[in-house]
Every structure is written in C-alpha cells, then in structure tokens.
Image 1: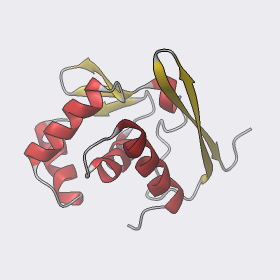
Image 2 (image 1 turned 45 degrees about the horizontal axis):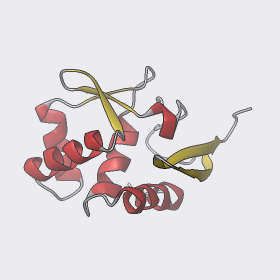
Image 3 (image 1 turned 180 degrees about the horizontal axis):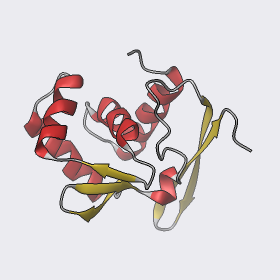
Image 4 (image 1 turned 90 degrees about the horizontal axis):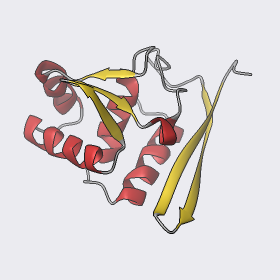
Length: 131
C-alpha cells in the first residue's frame, strides 16, 4: 500500500529533528500502523522480521534503529517486546488509527518548542470525523 504523503512528511520530519538512521521514516510508519487501541506496539521477533521485510531492511538494522528510538524517547518500553509511542510527541491519536490506509488523516502539524533542555516536538494530527 502506498504511503500517505502526510505520514511520509511527518516521519521524515521526525527523522530529521532527531538525526535518526536512514530507515527511520519507513520504520516509524510501520510502528504507527502497529499501535493498538491501548497505545501499545507489540514487537516480537516475528513482528520485527515482518517489519524488516516490509521496509526492505534486516532484523539487525531494525533492532539498531529501535535502540536509537528508545534513546531519543520516541518509543518507550512498557514490558518485554511491548512499547508505546512517546505520548508527549504523538498523543493518543494514532491508537488504532490505521485501518489499511491513512485516508482518515487530514493534516499533521508538528510544533517544536525550543528551550534550555533542547527541543520538544509535539504532533497535532487532524483526523476525519474527529471533534
């Protein structure tokens, strides 16, 4: 399935802000697709292999990128093989949002606050039918 341009631009912007590895935009999109209704992302070895295949990468590269995501607090570990998106960046709007496409995503804005501690991005996503 073709990537929604809004999602692609959003994931590339996050990758640029955090100086993430080259596979980051594709991997971030796969993670966004995987968020369940509780905000959890279950990443078993099988799931990571499936993601690696989808983004034309290797399991090792995916694991290394996930370590970088954790170090930047883009994803937060909850349990063994269970993560959540950083709610300060993503909020809860991506929870169970992906339904085979991103057509319900109408716009994504990234607000970046810059202070003494560095920068803090915050995504504001507008979804069709949302109030």
